[in-house]
Amino acid sequence: MVKVITYGTYDLFHEGHYRLLQRAKALGDYLIVGVTTENFDKARGKLGVIDSLMTRIENVKKTGFADEIIIEESVGQKFSDIKKYNIDIFTVGSDWVGKFDYLKDYCKVVYLERTKNISSTMLREKKRHIQSIGIIGTGRIANRFIKEARSVSGVNTQSVYNPHPESVKRFAEQWDIDPYSDLENFYKDIDVVYIASPHETHYQYIKSSLEHDKHVLCEKPMTLKRSEAEEVFELAKEKNLILMEGIKTAYCPGFHKLLGVAHSGKIGNVRYIESCFTKLEDPNKRELVDQKFGGSFLELGSYVMLPILKIFGESYTDLKFDSVKSENGLDIFTRASFKFPTGLATATCGLGVKSEGRLLIAGTKGYILVSAPWWKTTYFEVHYEDPNEVEKYSETFLGDGLRYEINDFLMQLTERGRNDFKLTRSESISIAGAMEQFINEFRGNN
Ligand code: C2G
Image (cartoon, rainbow, N blue to C red):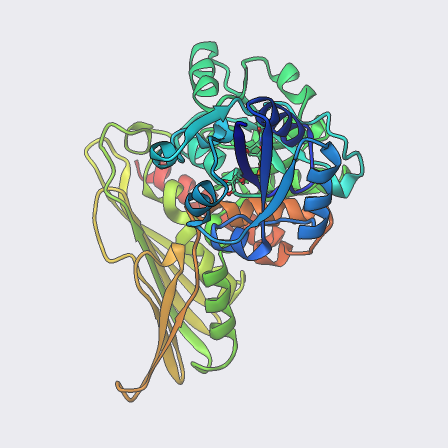
């Protein structure tokens, strides 16, 4: 008798799960299915699981393919199950290719092709529908997004658009998704759009996506003009669609803990903030070559302004920029100096100058220090006048962190939670306004 084992969460049970179990069963005579517990999913960084363990087991049972169902509770369990149940074949979908090769010494490992299109799911109800994502753009961030989206339950990255047929095909093959170089066709089969194209194209793509009735998650900076940001938020409101700007720090749990402490009064009234983000970039990369929309502030300014606006609010009385330029005229380092009625703030960012990427929030009783990289907040300290008095805080930050913003976006559009306070419309509009001022002044000086 050939014994086969497979594992999964099986949340919002869909055709991909069904087809996987069907083919797993066909590989042998006896199929064991391991269903993950909530704790295990949490530990392995899977977010947004909706169905209870009982419901997920019930759904696997209903298919009739499983001869035995077990629960998967810990990381090393696959290895011990293979021995315990005398397994001949371990199988899982092709989204895991290579990940379980370490089991090859103990049984045969088979990766079954994952099901690409699961939008025609059995789950028709809006809140339980698997949201199909289409990506606009094929750059580095789009690659990261796909990986991270696979750690969020309830979404399926289905297609990608880029006007150049060759590059979109290459990207799609790598991730086993559908390529489109025709925008109208791209919109046909998806629920939401993730925009990861060059900054200056965001505004048009947001408008076009909303006009096609798609919810939108757009990479930062969402737009480069205040009026454009206002316009697209208004359009989203009119059409009852979610439009969210993806500044990943805004959605990560450690940053929230930090804001909680800053607002709690622990350090008294905040009077000064200093935030810095630098990244030494290859001089041939778009960010350091694109004369019109490259440079450090357009690339990193959204991050460094975020804690300032979250803590002091948006009513600054003065904003001044100073930049260090490279030979080709782009800003390789920029300092944005803010004045607020109750304090001061400095945001610095660089692509060609390296500095300590820390965040300092100074108050009337003490200060918060978040060491680099503060934009992936995992640890911070609260210091007081007495240098021996230090409070320490830590928080998890999973993977590349994009999964938090994807999960928050999903919660908003399935109406499972209101979390738009994490990055409000007016904060996004203010950031666009600062970008606009920077571009105007910078170009004026050039
Ligand atoms: N699957 C698929 N096609 C999809 C989605 C999922 O073939 N469109 C497969 C997965 O590859 C997996 C199974 O269906 O083999 C269950 O998928 P999930 O519930 O998403 O579980 P997963 O996170 O893949 O768990 O220990 C857990 C396992 O390693 C895999």
